[in-house]
Length: 527
Image 1 (cartoon, rainbow, N blue to C red):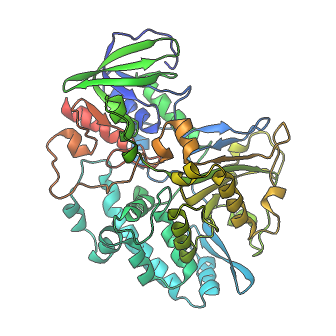
Image 2 (cartoon, rainbow, N blue to C red):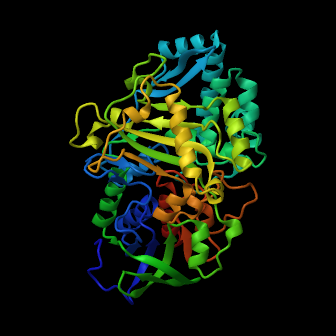
């Protein structure tokens, strides 16, 4: 059920899930399959949250993954548990990084799987085989760490000591206990290679590589640990195919899903809660033995009746640009565009460029040279294109070091950031990107840009923070209290009857479903 076709006022459910994003749907599917009565309340007209596909440009059938865009962390075991009819496809190129050195255009190619062309590309760029040897050694070490951490993500929280004792002390130091920049600078010499390694620490995270808080290290770990491989794959049909499959799994298991249902309050006590929501016509109230909050912790505190606290509001940091092209542009390096754009195209992400961009943004300025990454999902999954002329492709740009504070301070900052993102791409193209952009039915360029403020407006993510706040380590501190199922699964709040099931949970962040799974397991363990 996805519409207001039944009056649920006065009904009591075993579980009410606040928010119909992918994690909420995972929780609903697991709990309904276990025989519990489950109601999902979603503010928007459709479920999916940030993991949705939509035709963004009038007169164009192409369905873009407008917010979230790749899948890495979603465990294959979870997908099998729920019988999800979703296909995830590997990209033929891991990454390509165009560079200009001594006036000569070139680039660093990393194949998937890596082969002779990757080794040759490292040699051509750096002048020896040393950097590629260091690259292989580092990522072998990271893979060893991932193989230890990944299997625990769908289990009760291990302690830090339990994981540390299974891992080589060197890689544990490099990723967990010391700022990541130290390892990058010690292990690598080339500025471009250093930057390609470092960028996984900065996606959606505003930090320097030497930040003592280690927020960059936690971001890096999440980007490299998925399923023990860290591979980011393209969902066939777009991100919406993932959440559509999850919604089917939940409803087929017996969960009730109500869209257009904006929750305004949760009145919680230790043995239950009442949830107030509005269907567009009037306020309604339902009871729940347990509420699962698939919203940011900052939002949950407001729903629980606490005052809004601007000082603790998360601050997102990303520029997302969706583009539809009539054709792929040619690159100055001469590499085949179908190779360069098939994976992650790194732009202005040399290590020194990342540092300069962070310093400028920290000083309140849009980075002069904006670092970012480009993806062409239609090269891997042409099904998203729809009925379009031959040669049409999607392009997704994700910019780094663009905290929400930049756009609060300067009304022109969004246009400036978009212009600098395009300039960082055009530097490496024979064909300026605007000469390749398709037009919508009204003749307007098919370009859609979203800053953190747009994400907050569209999805109610505070500060436009794509992780709902700073990421936590995916384990418990050695002296953490793990007395209750909620604590053991990392989903507890200050109220026993309300649990986190979204990205703000201990092992949340990205499109993984892990937080939704773990909240469901905590509910079942407490019964």
